[in-house]
Length: 203
Image (cartoon, rainbow, N blue to C red; front, side, top):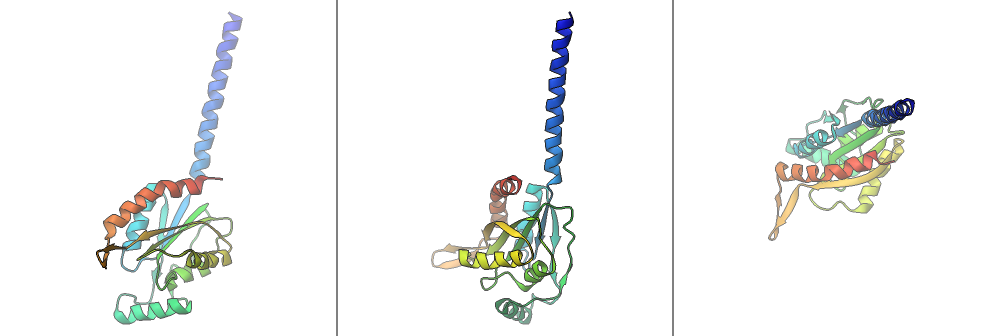
């Protein structure tokens, strides 16, 4: 009888340890929070980031350019600032990333660079000890040499870019390029989400 009780006790103890370990791992995983910081002019990048936030259970912050970028003059001004590597007035200027282990930075690509609003957000916020992933929306393939230059902006702010992903806003149809639409871009993002999640949770 005593031996049977001892065996039952050992079995209970093993189950308790296993449950405790699994629970501790879940808690640790929950502590690895992700923040998506994005800039979007037309709404394409916004749609992409909102869908990704749902897939990753991430929180999200939109960076707004306080200068008009919808008018023709505003677009020209934004493009010139992009080419010259200039900054702009944004809101919010400072983003509290204290509670986040992972940060995803997302923006469209203008003239092979991130637009002034995202450049400013990167410059004004530090990314030390953060796992950073870049997710850009672009009309065509964003070459590795340009990816490297964009990644350097994050490195200058203390961070390290683990990976660089791109979602295409345009596609070729015959001899023309046409807009793919937000729906297809969101579909691509949802398909990409498991890979991004794996990247962020890996040691």
